[in-house]
Length: 245
Image (cartoon, rainbow, N blue to C red; front, side):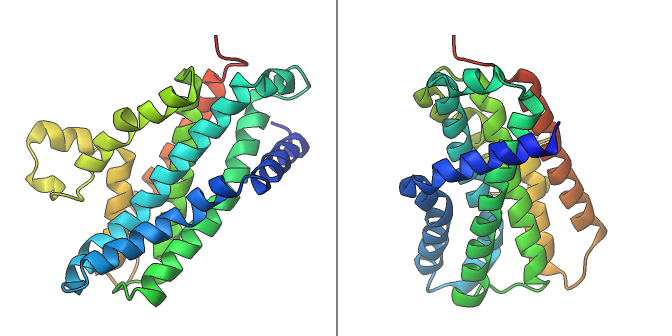
């Protein structure tokens, strides 16, 4: 990878996104709206929001970044832009790194907005530091970015990219512990949930929700989510194709 080429790619992506207000709204506004909606759905039972709000604070950024990144990358390939870029002295690692950097900066804004809204406006009761909550939310958004870059290599159209969501995101959503504690699941499902990164994202949020200090489990969760994001980015660079057949 070359730092200048990676930065140039990130700058180009951010310049394009600046002229796409709908995509920016999807990434920055929609997660906040969904969290606020959840808060007022449970207005009569604030403890329910406290129990689920932290988990969803990690899930919503992951899902939105997955959708936006997968579609944006696929659009680059189907339009021929990716083929022209890779014909230049630009490696796959530079391209993936540039995309990850650009969408990562947006992930920082998204996570900061969602965390600030949840804690200081909607009254999410967090025992630990809100900064730790922000850290996990940011890592979750980066993981969503990495997954989106990875699956875009296997989609032939934007419609197919959206169809990857039930295959990649929904199983993780069902098994991450949001709907039922993972310890109470059938052994086979528990074993599957143990290898899904969203499970550790939700566990990390719950650690901040319940503990005043950093625990060993929290450190483990952060390392797993971060490691999965880096691994998926590497796989995305390895499977990147110049164009859609």
